[in-house]
Length: 284
Image (cartoon, rainbow, N blue to C red; front, side, top):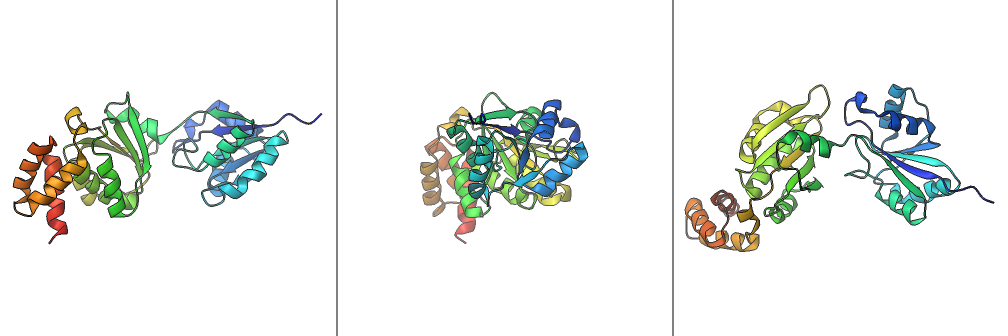
């Protein structure tokens, strides 16, 4: 009679503060036959700090498809394999989805060992509605694609959560203000749980301005939390608003075009004005 199948343990690790490693996570890491890690060097340093020595397997965005059969074979052979990312909970804008899906499809037990997540940590301190939220991960790096994606979220009533790289934070906040409205409340959480944790609060317009002038704003790991659209804004036909602004801007000033477009579509004047200014800049 063959060995019973093993188990895949999806383990959350600290997003900055080593004190956030749970006793259960530590025990699981110590007892795993091997640990599948996004970056073996990063996880190796974590294990060293914890006084744990276990074999490491690299599993990242570029090799996950190739790694899955090997890890499945080990799981089928009765081994317990741990899955971790560089920080926080695996699969949330991190590798691991293919492995978890394949293990589940193969009838192998998949066990979550919960812990830190930048998403829930940022939501907890944001002071914005959290009964319903939408996690959007990293926005597209290219401006045109980023703004197109954000325009599709303009009417989303749930609180929005994004990750962003420090070198793009200023551009992203400017695009958020332009597409969602500069008066939308938001929070930028930088270096959560670390020594230099900083929480910036204000409107998107305020935060965009600060990010362009404060050097520290553009450093470290960043999570953005943005209030959802108001009920009135949620009902706005974004395509109609854009069309109205484009047509009116050909004959009127941005402020006048925005005022009329807002009346016609039910959008806020700030949202319409942001589009009118953008149209003016693009047609110069």
